[in-house]
Length: 267
Image (cartoon, rainbow, N blue to C red; front, side, top):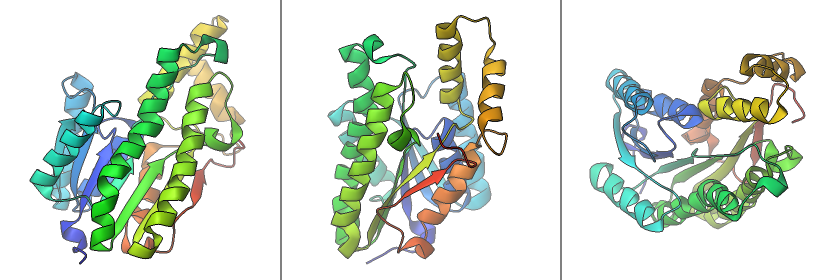
């Protein structure tokens, strides 16, 4: 038995930064009950992000909860999902938005760095899906959106673990979509190119440091924007708007797809 949209529960990983925060803001403002997870809840940026979520929920009639979530730890994933269910009920919607990367060539990736990226971006999404999918299928309704990247299909220089994680996430998306199709559960991957987020800022700093050409991060950002046919960088709110549609009733037939947001870019 499905619940009305006003009572649906959404989980957003990485919900206090970047794309995840934009998604959580959109859903809270639309009246959903939203549980967000993040490794760090105490920094000034994270506290401000949660404050913005609270305001959005008050204005839109939704509710929000923030909790510690380290996707690399199966026990923490299970505890997070249990606490979210105790507060709001079982998840109807899961948005896997948490992600990390590192600008390093293949030879610069230690085993630890490789494992951290794969475990967060890919295995972490798997753990969240494994915890949420059975309930969705038993109730006959569910929406899973994985935030991927154009790196899943094109590859980005000096991002081997990130590219591998996003390519793996696409395969996981298609498998989950097939499993859930007959039970009212959809699974889609949204793959943007460069998005204006703290993760992009960190990438730019690493690129500038590695190149050692005296170029500023602002100049590196401008160069990336100039290479895009639209001459700009994608905003996280654009991704959130698409996710908002994909988790609604109208998107029941959209599953097993990778939807790219690129501004016309090939990367």
